[in-house]
Image (spheres, one colour):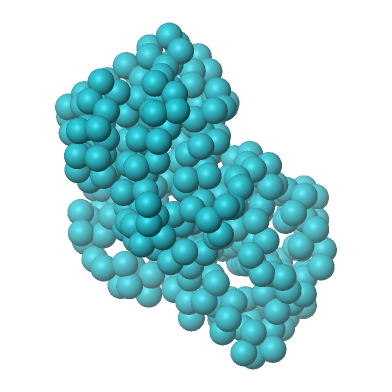
Length: 314
């Protein structure tokens, strides 16, 4: 199957089919957004006995998933990121994390990728609130092949998990055979002048920024964190020792998510100058991704400017 040229949501759906065929205990749960998630018709028609549409009742979906997990099932529960994190947070806290149930929660269309639906649906805080949840693992794959690796890991590990899922097609950045280890950051570029830390949807923009910096003779080390929790602090500290300057880039509010864990880690282990790029503590609005990247200051040129400024001020 040509995963390389698929939308991410279709990769999610077809990979779910594979996981169901390998383990009939894997289930696909939806809350009336199966077309948006890609599982209708891909999973619904191929594995109807493993497909459950709860309806417009996201909190109920999480509670049902917790009961299923308690009986040995492996439920993947998908919905828009705002519904999969904010709306269901209490159910996730008690029925999933506190009970340590093996529920896989998938937040689709994170951050600015929810553009046409505006501020109510544009969740800039899911990484932060899920990272603060005890027992919760938090993942954000950057491309089609890494998504498949992350899902395979999720299917065989027994733990509460939250994963961001960009729905659209994205550039391929990892090799087809890539592995996923939540305890390890992925070093996509090596450099000595500045460290750029990123995750998920923003990796593609950071790679472009790294290319631009190289043209200026600046070597940016790019660390991608497909796992925001657990977080590979050793890789960050090692890189910060070398470069002495760190820029974090995320499709989120700069408070509490990736930028938060970067600052927490470095302040305790290796005090380093850090510039956080992302959404500066604002709600969203109906707009294109380009408009939002430009407005909030985390497009390619902003990444280049921040990295250059830090590198040259050491």
